Amino acid sequence: MYTYKEASAPSYQLVSTRRNSPRHEAQTIIAPKSYRPTVREQLDSDAFRAGAMVGFIAAAVLFAAVLTVFVLPTMDGAVQAAKAACAAGAVNA
Image (cartoon, rainbow, N blue to C red; front, side, top):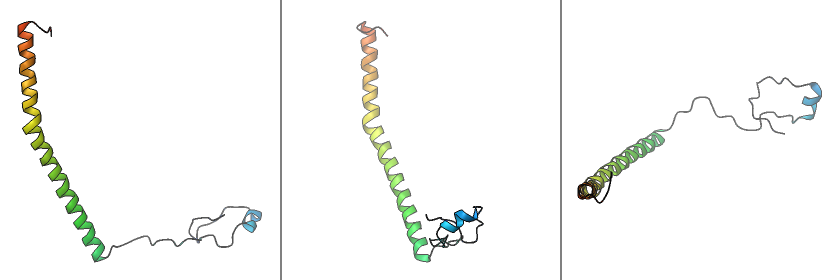
């Protein structure tokens, strides 16, 4: 059984339990508390964020264009057809 705690952490187990457990309690390498990215990693991160933002803005502009060019005129036509049908008495609203 491997435990994933720091080697300096206290163990509140009975003596018989500690005797049967593995001798090395911290089997994994524990990462340092503070990690500073390298310059290359920081530049890659900044480039990714900029690309994601440009992609999001491009998708929003495309969505607005499709909405303006196709959806709104179609809905206006559908509303006019519904008003005409209600005025003619074909549909009771």
